Image (cartoon, rainbow, N blue to C red):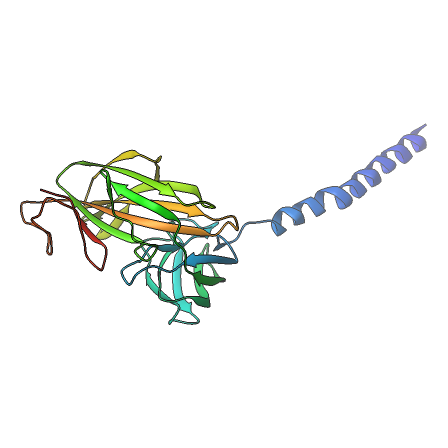
Length: 257
């Protein structure tokens, strides 16, 4: 009876060991293998050409913490794309489109004591997706070349509306407030606030940005960026006294007094 019990216990131990080897250990390795590491949000993407003032394209990261550090940003062809700046790792890298073509963007991300080398392939194309983009009822869009509109208003809110051409659809529309934190000596961008076509956007902090991202049937995203500023007692440089919106070659737009 005792021998049979020992055999039974030995069998249970062997079964338990085999179960651990077959199921538990591989699962632990699987968890380790699927651990997320920093990366660009896509290995390749298409961005669109704008005018010389259009710093509107953002190359975002995934699987990064707010404490991660980005260094050694490099672009293989700086005649196609130019690095502009990086507010913080969560906002991503801001780049400027210069001409149609292709290039590779690479950088290093330091996180959790490790350094990761990242890269993504970028193609720059031309596009003209909007029939109009209106601010307080007046069109500020110009044939796909001006992707950045600086707008000064004496009102605290600006109504933003648009109409898309056939084949294009909205991907996302959102706003951010921008300001300098003097205590921390850094520039801050607030979290994305979702908007709808025709939304009235309140101008807050130093200024408020509105981003309208639209995509074509291929899933390629075109961004139109609007910078909303409040007028002060001192008229902004270049502002017009006529009761109309004025657009310069750089896309500067002034609301009527």
